Length: 192
Image 1: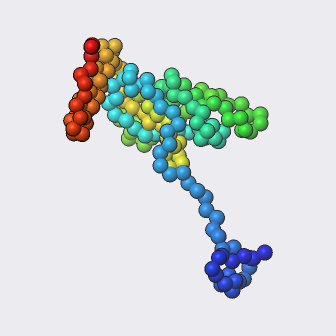
Image 2: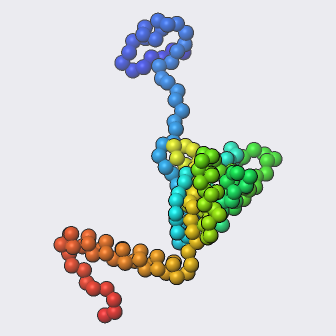
Image 3: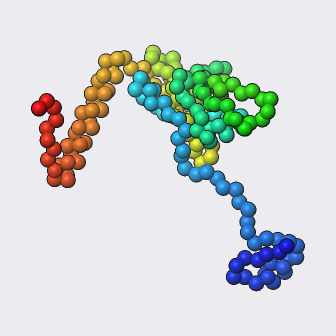
Protein backbone atom coordinates (compact mmCIF):
# COMPACT_ATOMS: atom_id res chain seq x y z
CA UNK A 1 0.00 0.00 0.00
CA UNK A 2 1.28 3.42 -0.90
CA UNK A 3 0.51 6.52 1.11
CA UNK A 4 1.60 10.09 0.59
CA UNK A 5 2.17 12.79 3.17
CA UNK A 6 -0.58 15.25 3.98
CA UNK A 7 -0.70 18.19 1.56
CA UNK A 8 1.12 16.48 -1.34
CA UNK A 9 -0.01 14.72 -4.45
CA UNK A 10 0.35 11.01 -4.99
CA UNK A 11 2.31 11.59 -8.20
CA UNK A 12 5.31 13.08 -6.32
CA UNK A 13 6.04 9.73 -4.71
CA UNK A 14 5.14 7.36 -7.51
CA UNK A 15 7.49 8.96 -10.08
CA UNK A 16 10.54 7.03 -8.84
CA UNK A 17 8.68 3.74 -8.78
CA UNK A 18 8.65 1.21 -5.97
CA UNK A 19 6.88 1.36 -2.64
CA UNK A 20 8.61 4.23 -0.90
CA UNK A 21 7.07 5.79 2.16
CA UNK A 22 7.10 9.49 2.94
CA UNK A 23 8.32 9.24 6.52
CA UNK A 24 11.85 8.61 7.67
CA UNK A 25 12.74 6.14 10.31
CA UNK A 26 15.29 7.62 12.68
CA UNK A 27 16.76 6.30 15.88
CA UNK A 28 16.41 8.66 18.79
CA UNK A 29 19.55 9.31 20.79
CA UNK A 30 19.49 10.35 24.40
CA UNK A 31 21.06 13.80 24.82
CA UNK A 32 22.32 15.60 27.89
CA UNK A 33 23.45 14.22 31.21
CA UNK A 34 21.30 11.92 33.36
CA UNK A 35 22.76 10.94 36.73
CA UNK A 36 22.16 7.33 37.78
CA UNK A 37 24.06 7.19 41.08
CA UNK A 38 26.28 9.54 43.04
CA UNK A 39 28.77 8.94 45.83
CA UNK A 40 28.00 11.76 48.27
CA UNK A 41 30.10 10.10 50.95
CA UNK A 42 33.25 10.53 48.83
CA UNK A 43 32.86 14.32 48.78
CA UNK A 44 32.57 14.24 52.58
CA UNK A 45 35.46 11.87 53.27
CA UNK A 46 37.91 13.22 50.66
CA UNK A 47 39.28 16.51 49.41
CA UNK A 48 38.83 16.41 45.64
CA UNK A 49 42.04 17.34 43.79
CA UNK A 50 41.08 16.70 40.14
CA UNK A 51 38.15 15.05 38.37
CA UNK A 52 38.09 12.94 35.20
CA UNK A 53 35.32 11.53 33.03
CA UNK A 54 35.82 7.87 32.13
CA UNK A 55 33.88 5.45 30.00
CA UNK A 56 33.06 2.05 31.45
CA UNK A 57 32.99 -1.43 29.90
CA UNK A 58 29.53 -2.96 30.47
CA UNK A 59 27.48 -5.93 29.33
CA UNK A 60 24.12 -5.44 27.59
CA UNK A 61 22.08 -6.46 30.63
CA UNK A 62 24.05 -4.03 32.79
CA UNK A 63 23.23 -1.14 30.46
CA UNK A 64 19.53 -2.01 30.67
CA UNK A 65 19.75 -2.12 34.44
CA UNK A 66 21.53 1.26 34.53
CA UNK A 67 18.85 2.81 32.32
CA UNK A 68 16.34 1.62 34.91
CA UNK A 69 18.45 3.29 37.63
CA UNK A 70 19.52 0.13 39.48
CA UNK A 71 23.09 0.97 40.54
CA UNK A 72 24.97 1.90 43.69
CA UNK A 73 28.42 3.42 44.15
CA UNK A 74 28.51 2.69 47.90
CA UNK A 75 31.84 1.06 48.68
CA UNK A 76 33.17 1.42 45.14
CA UNK A 77 36.84 2.24 44.53
CA UNK A 78 39.33 2.45 41.65
CA UNK A 79 42.66 0.60 41.44
CA UNK A 80 45.41 0.44 38.86
CA UNK A 81 45.98 -3.02 37.35
CA UNK A 82 48.59 -3.64 34.62
CA UNK A 83 48.45 -0.06 33.34
CA UNK A 84 44.64 0.07 33.34
CA UNK A 85 42.19 1.54 35.83
CA UNK A 86 39.62 -0.90 37.19
CA UNK A 87 36.43 -0.04 39.09
CA UNK A 88 35.78 -2.40 42.00
CA UNK A 89 32.65 -2.68 44.11
CA UNK A 90 30.17 -0.95 41.78
CA UNK A 91 26.84 -2.72 42.28
CA UNK A 92 24.63 -3.01 39.20
CA UNK A 93 21.52 -5.05 39.98
CA UNK A 94 20.59 -7.96 37.75
CA UNK A 95 18.18 -6.98 34.98
CA UNK A 96 15.10 -9.18 35.33
CA UNK A 97 14.47 -9.53 31.60
CA UNK A 98 18.00 -10.47 30.51
CA UNK A 99 19.17 -13.56 28.68
CA UNK A 100 18.18 -16.83 30.28
CA UNK A 101 20.98 -18.94 31.71
CA UNK A 102 23.45 -16.04 31.90
CA UNK A 103 24.24 -15.23 35.50
CA UNK A 104 25.62 -11.76 36.04
CA UNK A 105 27.83 -10.73 38.90
CA UNK A 106 26.46 -7.48 40.35
CA UNK A 107 29.80 -6.44 41.93
CA UNK A 108 32.24 -7.62 39.26
CA UNK A 109 35.35 -5.59 38.41
CA UNK A 110 34.81 -3.27 35.44
CA UNK A 111 37.42 -1.62 33.23
CA UNK A 112 37.46 2.18 32.94
CA UNK A 113 38.14 3.75 29.55
CA UNK A 114 40.50 6.74 29.57
CA UNK A 115 43.18 8.14 27.30
CA UNK A 116 46.64 6.70 27.97
CA UNK A 117 47.97 10.14 29.01
CA UNK A 118 45.19 10.52 31.60
CA UNK A 119 45.90 7.06 33.01
CA UNK A 120 49.60 7.93 33.31
CA UNK A 121 48.81 11.21 35.11
CA UNK A 122 46.50 9.42 37.55
CA UNK A 123 48.86 6.54 38.28
CA UNK A 124 51.72 9.01 38.73
CA UNK A 125 49.79 10.79 41.47
CA UNK A 126 48.73 7.56 43.21
CA UNK A 127 52.23 7.25 44.68
CA UNK A 128 51.69 10.42 46.76
CA UNK A 129 50.80 9.93 50.42
CA UNK A 130 47.07 9.79 51.09
CA UNK A 131 45.99 10.11 47.44
CA UNK A 132 43.35 7.75 46.09
CA UNK A 133 41.06 7.51 43.07
CA UNK A 134 37.38 7.48 44.01
CA UNK A 135 34.24 7.32 41.85
CA UNK A 136 31.99 10.35 42.35
CA UNK A 137 29.04 9.68 40.06
CA UNK A 138 27.69 7.33 37.43
CA UNK A 139 25.65 8.86 34.60
CA UNK A 140 24.61 8.73 30.96
CA UNK A 141 26.19 11.42 28.77
CA UNK A 142 24.55 11.59 25.32
CA UNK A 143 23.57 7.93 25.60
CA UNK A 144 26.97 6.64 26.79
CA UNK A 145 27.52 5.34 30.34
CA UNK A 146 30.22 7.37 32.09
CA UNK A 147 31.84 7.45 35.52
CA UNK A 148 33.18 10.63 37.08
CA UNK A 149 36.30 9.70 39.02
CA UNK A 150 38.50 11.94 41.11
CA UNK A 151 42.01 12.08 42.44
CA UNK A 152 41.33 12.72 46.11
CA UNK A 153 43.15 13.05 49.40
CA UNK A 154 41.57 11.56 52.50
CA UNK A 155 40.33 13.98 55.16
CA UNK A 156 40.90 13.56 58.85
CA UNK A 157 37.98 14.03 61.23
CA UNK A 158 39.01 17.58 62.16
CA UNK A 159 39.26 18.44 58.45
CA UNK A 160 35.68 17.19 58.01
CA UNK A 161 34.43 19.32 60.91
CA UNK A 162 36.29 22.32 59.54
CA UNK A 163 34.79 21.78 56.06
CA UNK A 164 31.28 21.53 57.53
CA UNK A 165 31.81 24.74 59.55
CA UNK A 166 33.12 26.54 56.45
CA UNK A 167 30.16 25.38 54.37
CA UNK A 168 27.70 26.55 57.06
CA UNK A 169 29.42 29.94 57.29
CA UNK A 170 29.35 30.36 53.50
CA UNK A 171 25.66 29.42 53.45
CA UNK A 172 24.88 31.99 56.17
CA UNK A 173 26.81 34.71 54.32
CA UNK A 174 24.95 33.94 51.09
CA UNK A 175 21.62 34.02 52.95
CA UNK A 176 22.40 37.41 54.51
CA UNK A 177 23.59 38.84 51.22
CA UNK A 178 20.48 37.75 49.35
CA UNK A 179 18.24 39.16 52.11
CA UNK A 180 20.02 42.51 52.00
CA UNK A 181 19.73 42.67 48.22
CA UNK A 182 16.00 42.03 48.53
CA UNK A 183 15.68 44.66 51.25
CA UNK A 184 14.57 42.30 54.00
CA UNK A 185 15.87 42.07 57.51
CA UNK A 186 16.21 38.69 59.08
CA UNK A 187 15.75 38.01 62.77
CA UNK A 188 18.99 36.99 64.45
CA UNK A 189 19.41 33.26 64.86
CA UNK A 190 20.49 31.61 68.05
CA UNK A 191 19.22 31.30 71.62
CA UNK A 192 16.15 33.37 72.52
